[in-house]
Amino acid sequence: MRGKRVSKSGRKLDIVLVAARYVGLGGQLKVARGYQRRGYVWGDLELIDRQMLIDQLKAKKQVAIGRVAGLPGDFEVDGKVNLVNIEGTESVVNEEDEPRGDDLGLPLF
Image (cartoon, rainbow, N blue to C red; front, side, top):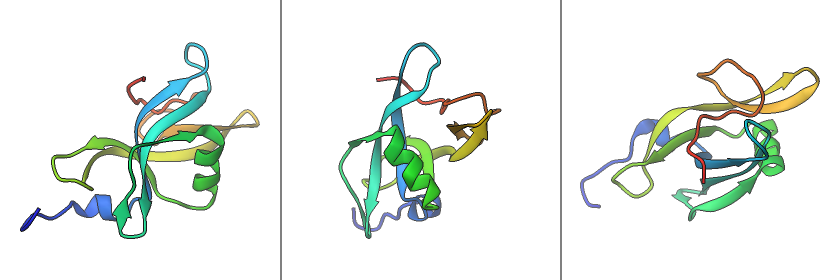
């Protein structure tokens, strides 16, 4: 859209997750819906499985949770995603919450 700019926080991200599916109640992340940056543009909504997300975090990619804003390619970021080791198990967590297994605080799909 002419004359509109995307937010600065969205320009530094590689992946934005918008929804998640877990195995069992409060269990491990199975798959997440999200957008992945492809060079200077964002790709379409895609499914990102747990292992791919862990690989991206290990590769030091900037992953966040959020929602799509009004402008295409712009996101309202709610927090960053981190990889932590809890009792010998890798867990994907939202930086805002206390780590207790895979919990991103995303809506379920």
